[in-house]
Image (tube, rainbow, N blue to C red; front, side, top):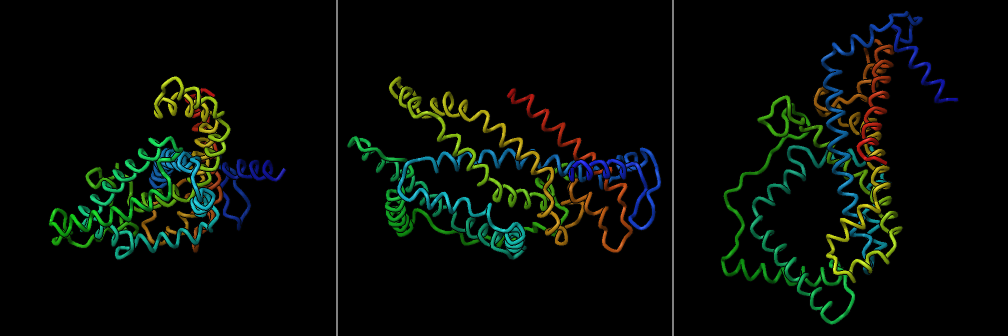
Amino acid sequence: IFFGYAFLRTFYFSFTDYNMFSKPAWVGLQNYVDLFRNIRFGRAFRNSLTFAIIVTFFQTIFALVLAIVLNAKMRGIKLFRALYYMPSVTSSVVITLIFMWLFQRNGIFNYLTTVFLQYKAIIGAFFASLVVLQILMVAAERARKQPCSWFEPSFILASALLSLVVVWFLQFAGVVAPGTDIEPVRIIWLNTRQTIPEWAGKLGIPRPLASIMILNTWTTAPTMMLLFLAGLQDIPRELYEAASVDGATGFAAFRHITLPGLRHITYLIVTMGLIGTLQMFDQVAIIGDQAPLESVITLAYFVYHNAFPGSAVPRIGVASAAAMILAAFTLILTWVQRKLARV
């Protein structure tokens, strides 16, 4: 009842000139015509589409990788699952404020980028040694006919400690060394109109919007991970055992057993991702004061900005028309995704 009433009122207001201080005046399709002539609405539409496609893609991939890692049988797995899920249960406002601090010009993100560029040779040597040692330890354990995951925490810890010794020796021998002529990174992420990549100009992704993409992917992927994890645990282990007996590799088992088994879960996750990203509002609203409006505005924020414009007169008719277009666009995109998924 509440949804139906709100929808009908919004639909009616989209054909009126209404500012909440006077009676609605019927204007027909004029609000819709004005929207398609509005440059800011076009920017909001493009930002929403870009945001939805990119974030949904990366959060789905990230969630699947997390689920596969956390589905492995290893010691302390429950603790790792709880830690990975923490971003989803933390207040969105708090997380956004922390990210705003991280993405300041002199913030942690730029500082860590500078450190990485300065020590990239040493970091590369450390991780290369870590991977090699981990592979050797797991291979030796499996050669003894002992079940062992590639991500066994105790082996990772041992490999990391040994890798530190290897890196120290390489640095002592002069094989690797930190850079000495690295300029501090001072990338402006929020208060800028620059795009990624810069050469793309207006066709690129605004840096502030890219920052919100990173934030949204990190905060929403853990929820998707739980759904993938449930799907993975629902796949019968006998299928993997039969594939192993037939000589199938891990990649072949993933391609022919895991992916088909997760088909319906993947459709659900992608659908939820598209709907959630198209309606994303809170993170843009919080970061909005720190970035140019046209760099971060989305359809949901466009609706809010016209309905509650601060000191200006509300444009409820325009906001309602934009809300109807957002709803229609969400339905169309979901329908297209369903057809492509063939579920």
